[in-house]
Amino acid sequence: MSRSRRPTSNIDRPAAAAAIDAFLRAIGRDPTREPDLVGTGQRVADAFLDELCAGYTVSIDRLVAENRVAAKDAPAVILARDVPVTIMCPHHLLPATGKAQVAFAPKGELIGVGAIVQLVDALSRRLVLQETLSESIVDTLMIHLSPRWAACTVRLSHGCMVARGERSHGTTVETLSVRKVAAGEARQLLGAS
Image (cartoon, rainbow, N blue to C red):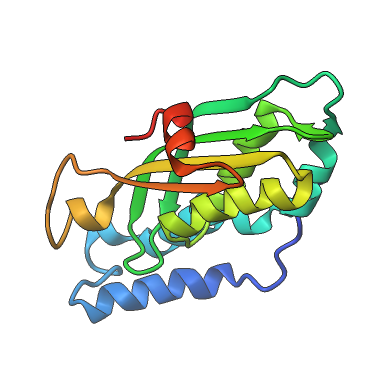
């Protein structure tokens, strides 16, 4: 376990698997009789706990602290482009996937691009709304590094828009969060629409 990981004592994996099996029975499917559904409860529980919601096990404070360095000779702007993002929509428990752009102008301290990618991953692998994710990324940079400014855009294709409701294949949703910089400047720098 990396030092930025924290223990998860309140997780009940067998109960999560049983709840998925109960859900399948509630919608008229029987995971004990339908061959394709045998073991689905356990697989879904494992997917959520080990991957889709793994961000809850990461201490953001520790992640940033372990990767913070002095910015004496830092570039004027640090920009991490096309950072992969997968979130689980808390409204429908369906995934949204896409990319994030994260930029900030260091003043005193910074974190490296690898840590930026880890930060985006830790904050996205949760039950989180897209707009909350972009705000959390910028807030984390502002709180922990006090840069001159910070910005983040997240562009995602939402499973809840593609697989149900509107069924709008190809639609992406973009959020832009900025602190201490004009939105127009941030959009230009990040290449946002």
